[in-house]
Structures are given as structure tokens and as C-alpha cells.
Length: 56
Image 1 (cartoon, rainbow, N blue to C red):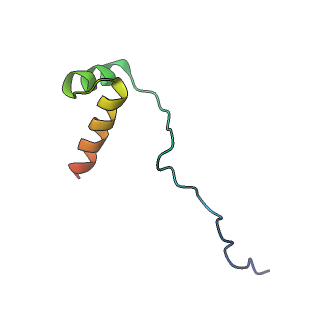
Image 2 (cartoon, rainbow, N blue to C red):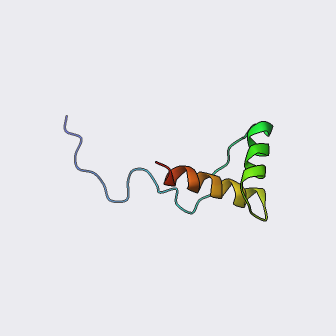
Image 3 (cartoon, rainbow, N blue to C red):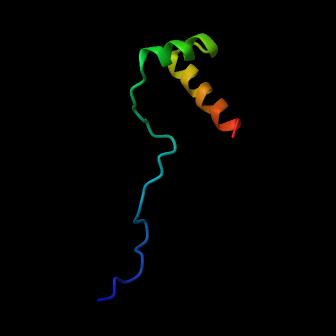
């Protein structure tokens, strides 16, 4: 049996701009806080991720 064509707007949704939750160990969080600047822990984590992506 044929499956047919792909329907419009079906499939995965983009996660850009959406909130993503994950858990970090205290030791990792401590290292991030020591090595990155920012007003909040969220800003420090964002900068850490951005730096990791630029190093690729």
C-alpha cells in the first residue's frame, strides 16, 4: 500500500526560541560559573554553549 505524499506542516517542529530543560551536575555548574561571565546562571550556560559551538 502506498503511503502518499508528505502533508504540509507535518514533521518535527523547530525548537528555536523554545525553552529546553536539562539537569547539570553541581561540579559542572560550578566550573561554568567560574569560567564564564554573566548576570545569571542561564546567561553563563548560554555563553558556554556558544563558545563550544564556535570551537567546532
